[in-house]
Length: 148
Image (cartoon, rainbow, N blue to C red):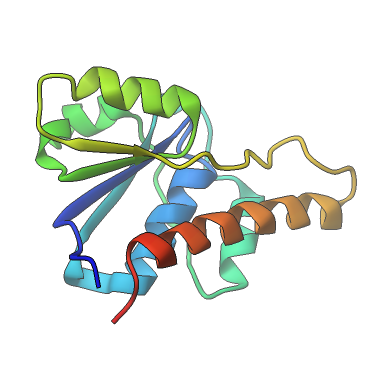
């Protein structure tokens, strides 16, 4: 089994859907074995209720998630170079992560991940899109960081 990084930052556009899902699922899979946070390029939204619902179905709690940006992390004293690994879940997050780590030895990985916002007309169709995103992230987590 591959060794777990000591710390991981998951990032996406707004820290409202994909990166909170990844953070919550990683914490559920690996608990205190790895320090996990998430951030967005921007922080102009609240956590998405469909993301909360999709994750609740698999026992991952997101209702207490506080949306934050890269800037919020830095203002809170959380330096980007303190993370061993940054996993970007959107192209904008990948660009921001690469830009902010260009002088550091932090590894940045890109996992192209479906943005479910705006997909579907009915509540069930929308929830299905969020489930697809959740399952895609979960498959990547299990592949990259298998549980013991």
